[in-house]
Length: 165
Image 1 (tube, rainbow, N blue to C red):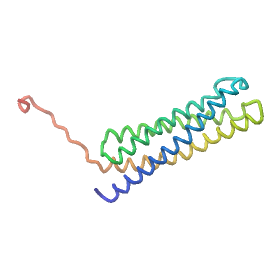
Image 2: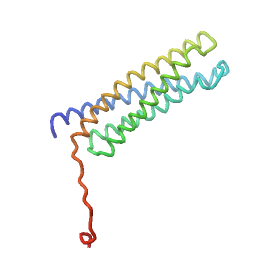
Image 3: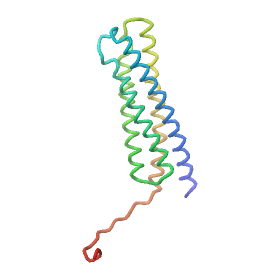
Image 4: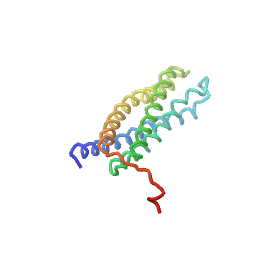
């Protein structure tokens, strides 16, 4: 194993630990919004205000699974796992971008000052965590791309009937 491959695997393991930490932060923000909406839902005009919370929870679940698969990729050299890891990272990026956009749109839609301040804090947390997660996703994609480049392609051959019998 070359030195660059070994360093890429170590970076990927560290990034996966950051994925787990990010999933915890985003998931707790989503849970807080869901519980807060459950208690104060009558004060809001429509139910669309909880969409960022739902997307944050889904994003946290996908980010947690991407972190586990990323750790597995750093241990095992499998093209299928690397591809699954990249797809999960793209899904997380799309979910986080959507949650951040919906959070930005929903800022200021509460009706009481203290409640609105609490919601704005958590919505800002979702917005800013999306930027941090995007940076971590880019580093993860770069390290997996390096690992995918180092892995040799498998060669396939056509089997004839004479070769089988």
